[in-house]
Image 1 (tube, rainbow, N blue to C red):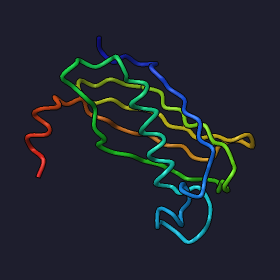
Image 2: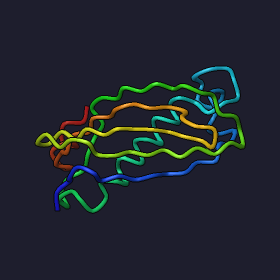
Image 3: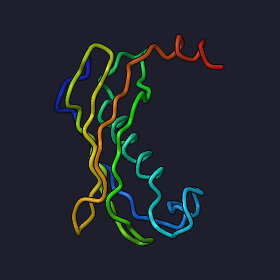
Length: 125
């Protein structure tokens, strides 16, 4: 039960008013917010890892590099995909992409780190 390259997950989202930059206070336009896209991609990473980490462990975000390329309005549908490209000890490197019917919306890379859940929570400030 260890993460391995090639693990992937895809998540679909139909954009609502709650997903917009206005709602996230990350802008003043009614389009899909960048922070919502990032969260969707993180969710895909976690889904890809489901069942592949030791029971006492979880993964946490360490770094994200992300380009938001195209705006998507309320009512649009996007698909976020995360693929595990490299396993470097506890470091897990994912490739991210978000698409809609018209093509690529966003892309990036995400590093997560496998941690012991109890030890990690003991260090919370």
